[in-house]
Image (tube, rainbow, N blue to C red; front, top):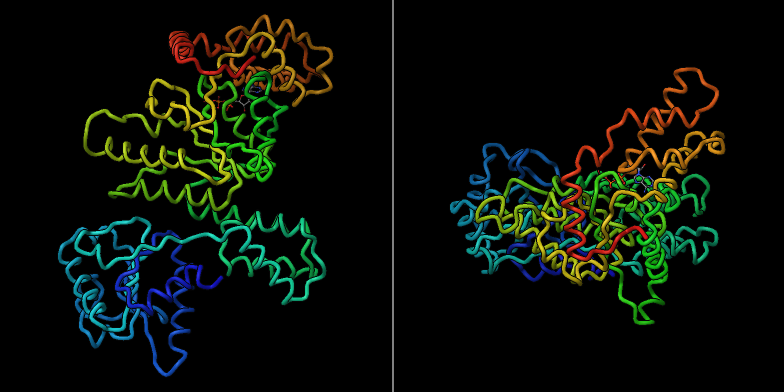
Length: 506
Ligand code: ATP
């Protein structure tokens, strides 16, 4: 396993005198840990290797002691020092936060000078750690890009089995090892071993309850990365009133998703995902949550607004990171909320933001097209007219659904669900048919709102239970969605009809 890991690759590149290794990652701590190990390995014979680092916060420092190298705090002066062969020899030079500097010719030429010396035989390596891949053309032939790769399921299982053997842990079932290996996806070997040790610390055993610890740590990891958000799964498919076509579709995909091996063997494609478009407050987000619950996998929400960065290439880098993190954690549902916000403005002229958006969009399409990991995308959008047509073509999503205002029958179910959630004891006495009649044009969110209001005012009035009239009063005090946005809704409905999207309702 060693030679396949990042550390293994780095060692090989360092031994073979690759002048510049560019590591594209946001996990600087992990790289630091690997470099420390490598320094130790390299220095174990008679020679001593040292490492120097430059970063935006502390300037030029000794990698191990973190002590500042006085007088050389700018990147340029640090590089000026290092480009002397005697100083460079037996060194690993780690450069962080330098993406913006790679556009400055003076900096680039100094790095190039160092890279030349290394290729002429000076025993050294420059490691650039960056969240964005910025490669000046002058440095191209000296640079090798290394992506942090995540361990696959089999590699994780090997680590767990080794841990069990070495630490003589009492028997662990194959099923639990399978579950643990899925839970550990996205972690490094070092982290897995730490978490295994922590799991065994209390009772000396590995049990099902340890999965929760791993899950909590995973949530931390995702939080730290800052691009994806892990959403708790409180809603199930039974919390959705109506939308039966969409729900049936999810149930069919569930069968494939949970039996991926068998399905593939049978000739079924890996599900890619679904685009759910339509009226606000009618259950799009609810469906994303229910799908993850149904598939029994984590739900990761990608906020497209947060992806957009200041620097050239930063947004693409963020998208790549979000995708690789989701793939590392997969099987999972990746929920892309308000898709139209990210991709509005495509083709609306050249330069600046429009260009970034277009490139971002291209990257996203390619990923959707070629995706092989069990990362099921649920994209939701309110206004499909803002979405570029390429996205709606077959092959990107498995299906596109349109969610409209709920029908009479659907409103009945939605009322029942929400009354049952808050006042199950009152449900029998409530005339839901009357509520349905009075709530034409209401969205699911409107219905939830009136039930909530009615319950609150009944409580305030010290009533023992809520009555039909309480909810009718709340309905009369509410301006429904269709009242507020009538024209926009009509326009949207026509648009969806003309594009022949599948109706989420039956
Ligand atoms: P937006 O586009 O504004 O984000 P959305 O379509 O994603 O809206 P949701 O967030 O899913 O809407 O719905 C808002 C709330 O309304 C839900 O939390 C749920 O309580 C209620 N709701 C909406 N539709 C339904 C439904 N079909 N059945 C039950 N509850 C619903």
